[in-house]
Length: 327
Image (tube, rainbow, N blue to C red):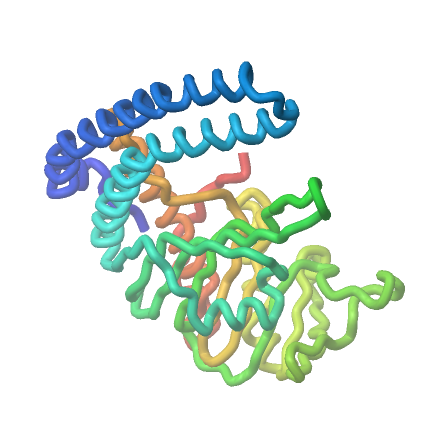
């Protein structure tokens, strides 16, 4: 699955980007004007602050950094707004080339609630979601978006926000029917108390018990743990050939932690990675590179989702070679 980047840049997207030159120039001019006026106002205030009243050095530093930060943010806002508009235009065109839709703003639904319930994502105190791609891929309902989850740690002056998950949430209709709930996570995700005696024989999620599914594939148990409320169906869904494919996916994406939940006839994936789909830029000269990068990122993730889907005979729906991002 690939998008024709040259076709995009020579067609409607290229024409649209060319028409944004005035908007980009206006955003840069407004930003520089705001920074200039910010400096004109701020410099005498800071001079009076540092050489005037006998305030503590710490208070002077806090006020100074706060003023500089506010002036910088005020000036950068036009550039940020222009960059966002360019990003939405580029990603929407890429999505259309794949036959799906794109939205910048995301309101997570039942798929993310299930991800939290079954531990596909860790606990967090603050969240941000963006870049939703949705529609139908090869006959399967498809929904993908980015999630950035943070937890507040430390106390007092040492309080800080720490990223606990950055990656994508993918929701797809599965290629074969199933009734069970089956959870695939990294090996050792559910260890017994103090890690003694290996992994747990069962796990409980809001009163829903899932039992550990033994696998005969040695490489599987080194990487993944499987829990389900239907041992037989779980083995049909996650069989040895399927395990080999999952391991290929792990290598293709540089060993990023892939987790999956099979429930309600759908599969939900959580794949850790870096910030993606940032195709917008105030610099027009980087448009083609950013279009190509965002297109490749979406194609790779879509291939990943389709590749671990199955048809009624247990074969994956997409046998195309996976990209190698491990280097």
